[in-house]
Length: 577
Image 1 (cartoon, rainbow, N blue to C red):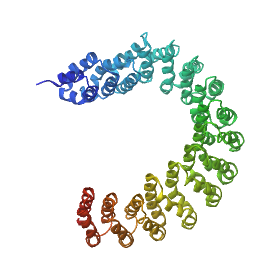
Image 2 (spheres, rainbow, N blue to C red):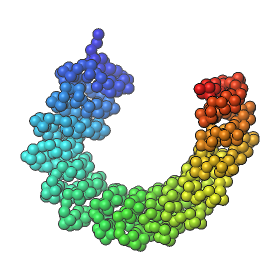
Image 3 (cartoon, one colour):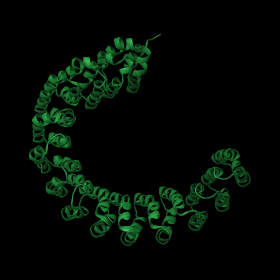
Image 4 (tube, rainbow, N blue to C red):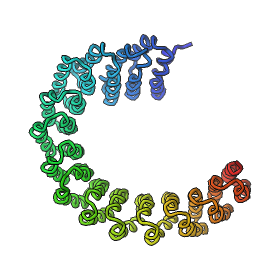
């Protein structure tokens, strides 16, 4: 009989990559079958020396090796997985290296203190000694974990290693160094950050490669947490402002993308006096990608600005210009964010400064712009009140309810129950009730389906009497429609509503409709009638089910269509319980 290791070797030779992947993902099972001793003496050496495969398989291996602590007989043997993981950390493929680094960082936290320097810190040093960039990029991701548990002497050496990586001739290494600087900053004391790492950050922020500079920006919040005000104001802030005006749009884009973090890190005074002017320039940037990133941060930045008059006088004019930006993506990003200004502005400022902007975006030609506004309308409704909502925004909402894009109509349907709660029954009946019922006859199936679910939520908001008076008559009317799809919508509406109205209403007002449609010439309707009767069986008592439902279900159980018979029998079984 073949051993688990032999079977593993055979599977890894298979031409089918999926079989090889399955073999790697079963390593834990194989290790358990071998036992801790054989896993240490046989499986780990095999994985270290024998696995040469496609990147997908190596990626899975890198992940599995990070889970081996309990399979080796304890943490004292965990150093054995470092060798195969080190090999994977040198791989050509980025995702394989990244996963190996992730597993190595997991292992680093579990290694015994006695062997940490010898096993893990030495591994990091070895990775930095090669001529090729791949092991060096992996080393950047391991430095913080090594530094956290290293001796003071080793920590000093690791900082020197990091400084060399920051100055490496290969841009890929400098990018990795920029990416992981904040991790190292978190482990280093404030004095050392000020003395050493701040200067290294400066080098990265001024790197000749824009791909390095843009990654450097993400480290600013971590540095601010460790630096005093003198260094923040005198050294860090000028670098940030310089990057906000960088010649490369990708660097400016990154600054815009993390601008909320910068506002939170620098504080209100710096934000008001120096970050807001920089943000205004980003909102007006020549590149659409930069304007898109900045437009999505308007509310977040405004939260960090005091007084709000600064937002109104300096930021809002740019926001209004973006509402008519030539780029659809810019307008969509703005629409998804700008509604958040309403709670900050309050009723008067929202009415004075935002309503016109919102109406403009609600009428935008690009569907995503309208969708993003619709999804956040409640933020404005809560601030300006129902009267102003109906006066200024409701006409636009009514227009969107008949929008040619079905996704826009769907978004309005989703928003209606929330709007109903805010408007109240009388106002809703006057303005929106007919609209909700009209959706039941929409030409798009997804809209009709959403409309039936919408009726359920509205019934929960306004109660049974409202449902009987305003919903059921329209549902009953649709059962006579010549198009079977509309008759089917009637069945769906009954099936949806039966769980939110009392059983007596179900039996008196809704069941007769299903009885009539149980003889419909379309089989699709008949088997959905059976499914609806099954739902009714859940809400009525056993006697009612026996007397009111069984005759119709018996008829359907003898239907010529197999699916109708199946659902009828299933409903009868449930009704009999």
